[in-house]
Length: 362
Image (cartoon, rainbow, N blue to C red; front, top):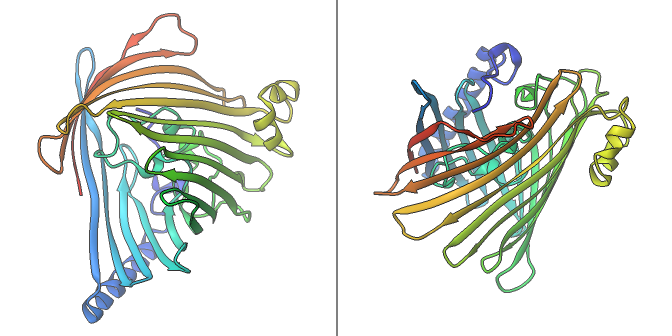
């Protein structure tokens, strides 16, 4: 699903490989040395998932993804995480950040960390996602996996016995100006303007988690063309029914005051075509039925709108996905998914390929 992007030359991969590898090896040696000297803890995590896509006349074995990381506890308040993430058709994406917690409710991250926009960006483990495919907005509009260099501060405050509010604010290099948002991820910043964003969430074991996200930053080399994204997300469970959903709206290219257009409606872009030329919006709703600890059926409805007039890209897609996740033994998961797709105002639904996935996560 989605285009194959990113090469070493596009910057999302390991730009300046020798310098980066020397730095990474140095960090690894430092962490290993500190671990043996102080006897601190190492907590590995990760997943490996392979997908077989069965089309009308052939089997596609090319889809798989890998995430491998280790959390190293240097002190009770200081953690380091090092790892890599690989998606089909893309180069290895490094993860490396230092985490410092203080005042019991504040957490500071510095390094290359997952951008806290919505929730799916941090739910790529196959044991967390009941279906196989990535929601369309999390592939085209939110470039999952979205990892960037920067700094993030998170504050969590209890507001009741069980409920809490969490606020994350961050500065990062930001997305560049590629063929689409996925192609805009980069290892080094292409301009002198940092991007920034925030996510606020209400968290309750009784009602679920409800969040709102925002992101803003310049994309082009001259820091003139800007990108603005806003999003809403929900995750709630009632009895055996689990609901997940996200909504995103954004302007892909604008010069001034385009954040207002996100809130006031896309009619602003139509009325001002010279100023608001490119946009995206969409959502997904996913229902899962926890009828058994061994088998969880699920369905998801996706809608994606994406128009970039400069590049001539126009997407209007609806998709219904149906599947089941089977958990025979921990940590193994086996999934099946198919569905129906309607692209660019077509009047008939097309049957999507059958996807089979085998995943292992720790």
